[in-house]
Image (tube, rainbow, N blue to C red):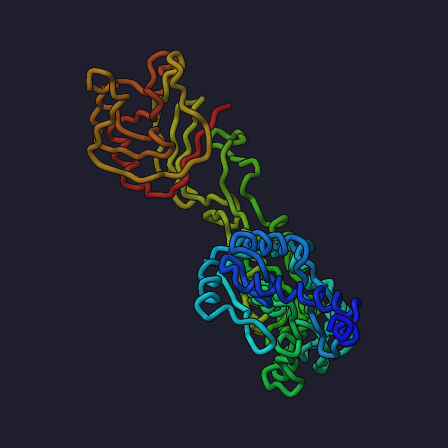
Length: 469
């Protein structure tokens, strides 16, 4: 019998049978170990066969630190790889892997070619968007794409008419759309992103047959007859259409593209010529002296806003007159920009003059701030804040709840914070050197009758020019 067995199963064959039985024994053991995933189990595309839930979690998180690759396929099938390490990709498993294991156990831990043991679990994943965009832009089919351009109007060329340049459909990619598709693929831990599955080619938006584009081209050719006139009082600056045409860079859709740098240069030239704000205020005093008054007053063009306004004016294709957008305005463009109606306060001569339309209608002595007490009235160019009848002027509030002083006045006309013009019926004399040792707290003390007359003529915003020499 032994000899018969040896003939049927030679010794070598018996050893092969025993050895071949080992994997089936191992697979059977794995199938029976309910703490481990069955053979062929994948979670979010990662192979986790034979692992416990904790081992699978650690393996998945480690896998996405250097082993994960997203393949990007162009329309012609060309494939490029984006590695997780190139884009700062990270993943943390937040879902319940034990629930997947339990499902396998409840389903009888089935394995084999006919069984689908692929699962998905919730994860927290992401990447560095800057690195992802860089990776997208470096893809060959993105870098080597031919541009897609809308039909547009040619730039200005001297002696030539504006023409419509036809549209071109290229292979250019909308990187923002490609980014969105890549982010979605990465969030699902997909291994392949096919360009054929997403719509990310740039498409033509404006053709050469577009009615508005053709009308715009005709309008541009009329620029030689379009002038923009800036008005500065009696002065004018005319921006000719022939110069405007040289600023035209073409169009985007139906919008005229204007060279912003050239518009800004032109606006700056206007400001250099006409701005007076911040420059020394030269004043011819009633005494005949020419004095320089400190302070900030005058015209100042808001260059940034005026550039925007000028570009809009050009885009309208219509001749027009306009004043610039100002940061600061004054009263007049001729003579003194503060006009011919103002209050002149000669601090050295202690005398006030009220001018109306260039004529001095009132002058009076006054007493200003006490020099010896450090209350000297400061010089400067100011405007009247407001005027008020029957005001009680108060000093600083003291610790005992009373004020340093309380002085009722009938006519109050502030122009520099708490400093103003007002009547002082407690004084018998005004002018001279009184202010040196017996002056006010900084205000301009006036004879009551003069204060009443001044009150009737002044208004909010009237210039108040204080100076010394």
